[in-house]
Amino acid sequence: MTQDDDKRAAAEAAVAEVQPDMLVGLGTGSTVRFAIEALGRRVAEGLRVTAVATSVDSATCAAALGIVVRDFAEVARVDLTIDGADEIDDRLWAIKGAGGAMLREKIVAAASTRMVVIADASKRVAAIGAAKLPIEVLPFARGFVIDRLAMLDARVTVRDGVTDNGNLVLDALFADFSDPRSLAMALDATPGVLGHGLFLDEVDATYVADGGIVTRLERVEVSV
Ligand code: 5RP
Image (tube, rainbow, N blue to C red; front, side, top):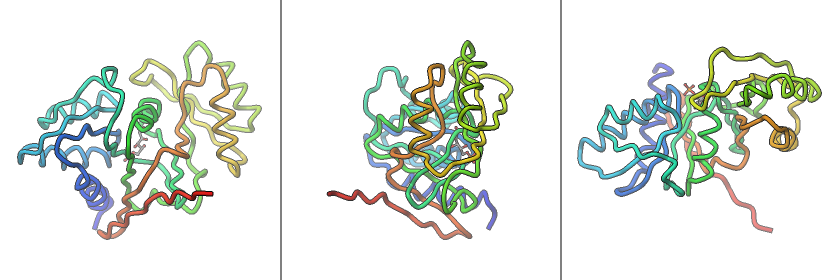
């Protein structure tokens, strides 16, 4: 079993959730590509669905496989979104954005009735925080945001190139990642930060494949 076999197995398990006439959100990345391929096969067999994509890359791939891709700007609600992650833990907290699509991914996740993360076992961690956190920044605000991140005790690198939205990505390593919720709030409150890869409330379930065995983990809502 290779890592790609596991990515494919997790992707196929998630795509089995897709029902006729759903509007499906397509994330971004190499694991999602397997999901797009699996969905493309189901569409070729006659499944009627439409999709929205979180990146130009995913939209192009899906369209090439015969999946009808709608403009997300015309959409308010998505039934099921399937996306990858760079780290995911048992709280279903995730770090996303190595592929640079985290801003669109978070918007599509927020619009989704259900969002599932697919991953091979290398992405499953005891607690998120070892991966660099990608942060999408308005180019105008680069210096200001880097300074604010330094105040949050982060080591920052500026990624080459721009996102599909024409913005910069800063990859931040925080000395202290013990309180991701406060960190997310601090980032959300920083002018010039347009989005970041901390997904704390968005993920409803994960499919993680390890040696060909796929495990599904569902978010448990605790009512008080
Ligand atoms: C893109 C993402 C990707 O889903 C994440 O980086 C995982 O990618 P891959 O499946 O290629 O490891 O968040 O913004």
